[in-house]
Length: 275
Image 1: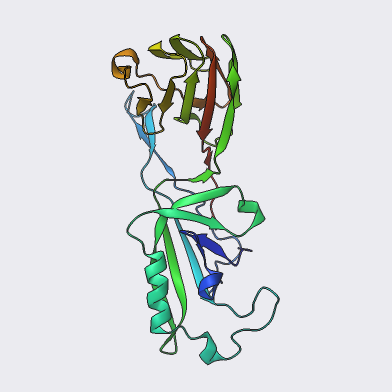
Image 2: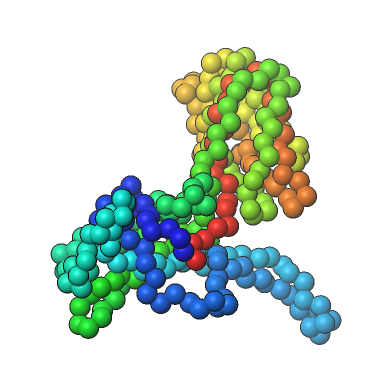
């Protein structure tokens, strides 16, 4: 790996005096699993001669490993730790690294490499010490993600539409299927809000909307309104707007039945990994 630095929970590895380094890099030609792999559930027919897929799933989350050591030079190339004793990692430094990295809750991880500039992962680390000649000279960091893949940085679409106006989004996710975005819609007229998605032939309906009312649809499948007099739970058909793609079609065209102002945000799935 070319990158020497990473950022986790808003702090850089270099700010702790460490850099990414290889202690046991695999030789050329070794197999590298670059993301969490699918499992396929099948059913046996014709005495096993035909075993069609019933469904597929990710059985585990993404796991990545890094080894780190103390920095040998600064950003200007000036030597920092010149001797073997300088490279030794003290117990206080180990404790500080474990406190930073071994969090009980997931945090954002990014890699300082232009190739990975648009991507991030969420998760946390386990930290193991690498001992040489009775002292610690490196740390093995095992990052465990809360997903089987990375995410691309958030994409934001916003604008104002008249009746019959359309939101057009080309989904760039690396995974076929759908994602629930964050969507905030401000109604610019009174009436029934209908948002029709052509790719799925699916319509999101909220009845009895008022001019100036803002309706928010969340990625965790919640809906709310700033109009305290609107019983939105009774007027919503509970079909949330989705961003979708198939292998042959990535274009999402969403049409509105009343004038609206909208802000739509989502994170495409990115099947990238640091190996």
